[in-house]
Image (cartoon, rainbow, N blue to C red; front, side, top):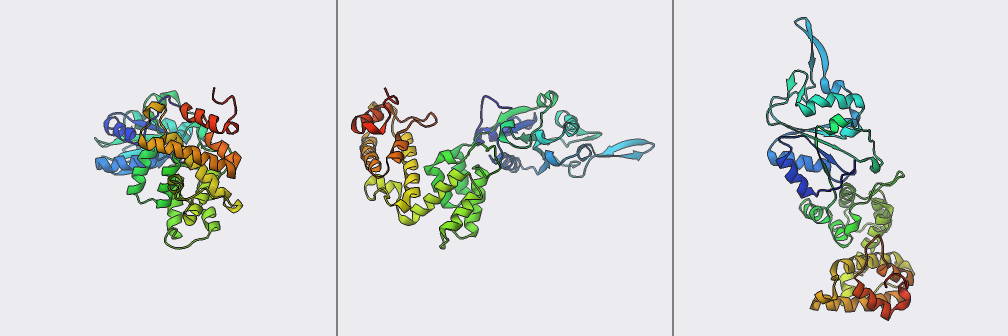
Length: 356
C-alpha cells in the first residue's frame, strides 16, 4: 500500500491518542523509520504496558491458543502474553509479513478484540504496523477484509521532529550536526541490493557505535570511522559523513568559509572534504535564498553576494563540483534570480538550456 498522504511523527502521535482507543490503527512505513518507537511512546503516554507480537514469527496457534478439553467440550486457551486482566497496548508489528492463516487468526482480535472466549480488557488498544511492498522487506498481500478493519496512516521521516527527539535522546553530536547540514540524508529508500541504508534507526545505531568508540572524546582513526559509517548507513552518505568528521579535524567548517574566515580545501587529499562542503553549501543555498529577489533582506543579500564569490572560487579548484552546486538535481532548483546572476558571471558553469 502507498497512501497519497503521509504523516509526521507528531501527526501520528495525535492520531494514536484520538483514534487508536476506538479503532485499530495500522501504520505503514519503511523499515527503520520509527514505527515501533512511536507506538512505545504512545503506550507510555497513556500509561499502558505495550505487548509486541512480530507477525513474521507467528503461527496461528500463537494467537488463538491451543484447545483443551473442559467439561466434555474443547476450549481454546489464548497465550499468556495476550490473556491479561488489565488493559494494555497490543502492538502487531510486521502484521503484513505473516501468512494468510495468521492474518485470519487476527480477524476477531482486531475487529472484536477477542480471541476465542477471551476478550481484551476494556481500555485496551490494538495497533498494527508493516512495511510497504517497495521497501524490499518481507511483505505478503494483506486481505481486503483485514485492511477494511483498520484505520491506515503512512509515516514519513520529518527531519525537524527527528532532530528535536535526537537532542533529547543524546544522539551523538556529530550526527545531529551532520543531519542539520544534510537533512536529505536522514532517510533513503531501501535499496534493491543487500546493503545498509540510511534511516532514523540506522543513524541511531551509528550514534551508539560512535559513543562506544569514544568518538569526540578520544582520537579514533579515519579508517575506524569509515568502518562504523559504512556498516550502518547508505554508502554515499557514509562517504559524506566520513568527510564531515575529517573536516571537523581540519577546521574547514562551512560557516567559516561563508564568513570568509576559511577557504575551500584545495589539496587532492582533501577532495572528499571539498565534496561534502560543496554538497552542504548547495543545501544552504536551497534553504536560505528566497525564491523571489524582492524578499532579500540584509543578511540574505550578503549571503547571495558571498555565495557567488564562493562558487567562482570553487570552480577554480574543481569545475565539476562547482557545477554540482548549481545543477538542477532531483527537482531541487536554485532561485531563478540567483541563477541568472550565475549565468551572467560564470556562463560556462551552467548549461545554456538549464535556465531560460
